[in-house]
Image (tube, rainbow, N blue to C red):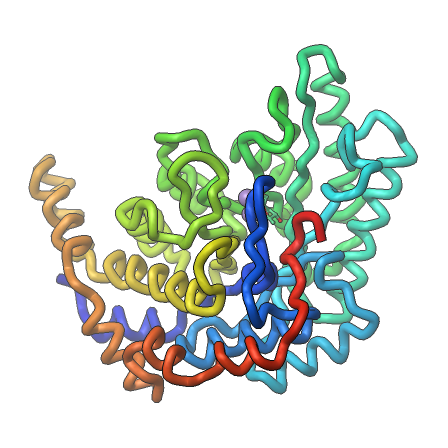
Amino acid sequence: MAGREAAKNALRAQEIELPSWAFGNSGTRFKVFAQQGVPRDPFEKIADAARVHAHTGVAPSVALHIPWDAVDDYGALGRAAADAGIRLGTVNANVFQDDDYRLGSVTNPDPAVRRKALDHLFACVDIMDRTGSRDLKLWFSDGTNYPGQDDIRARQDRLAEALAAVYERLSGEQRLILEYKLFEPAFYTTDVPDWGTAYAHCLRLGERAKVCVDTGHHAPGTNIEFIVAFLLREGKLGAFDFNSRFYADDDLIVGAADPFQLFRILFEVRTAGGLAAEAGIAFMLDQCHNIEPKIPGQIRSVMNVQEATAKALLVDTDALAAAQAAGDVLGANGVLMDAYNTDVRPLLAELREEMGLDPDPMAAYARSGYGERIAAERVGGRQAGWGA
Ligand code: LRH
Ligand code: MN
Ligand code: MN
């Protein structure tokens, strides 16, 4: 086993970004189950995110989704975050909820709709200038439902044009992060369906354009760690949207469906040096808690990422390299599995105590009374996004 102390140091430095939308009510197209105490505005989402950080110590930033988190005064929102001990992070653009986007946003055949979408993306960069956010994350629902509906190559041209305009608008410290997704809501073609398409566009744009790997956005059986290893090698991995899936884009708690896959992904990140802050990889959650309570859902998610990271850090890479060089297939696999099968919960409990935290964040939150307090104080909480 590799060193416990080295592992703890890396875990202490790890930062996991929370999605503001995880704290609001969410559901499927069949039903949104309302919960008590959900935030009524972006300020209350920040308070909830800060609560997750208070119990875990490794979730110091919260991602915004615009317009879901639109406010008049972003300076005030940033100050509220700072007062609560966190900061504002990635700005996620939303060009998928207006009636105008029925046939797409930046790839829409109508230039007026494309202009409207681009103006929204520029407005998101204006917000980043005010919040000090580094990353603009772009996910496009654009695509077609029927063969022949639109020209596939022309849509790629329109996409490239919009991305170039946004990239041009960014400052030298800001980055464009392009997220892909296999399908949904478009069912026939999607304009950014996979990592290869995202990578090709980012490559043309330049150094500060990177790919976001949302773990729920692949076909079943896809080897996500291979994609991660490839993008890391090319210097093009910008961010993760962590969640887990059984079937499609389920947005369940990361590591719930397949903790082994999460370990394999984080092992590739670790061995490529991607855990270091300088690598510039944003470790974000992108989840919805439809039936479970939201703040504990986020705490559990952060802990799941930590557990997978800890196991990845415990892999004895010297022993692994020796076994690989010797062609010892079972030996190499055994080294990896030894780390994966290690119970890292005591190590993480120890780390939390060293950080001045309760070793059991879930129990500490339950004891804190915060959940009961917000349920009593907040009446009429809003839906996270869908249909809001
Ligand atoms: C799309 C997506 C994207 C959106 C979020 C709400 O499925 O993963 O990241 O911004 O969901
Ligand atoms: Mn996502
Ligand atoms: Mn998604």
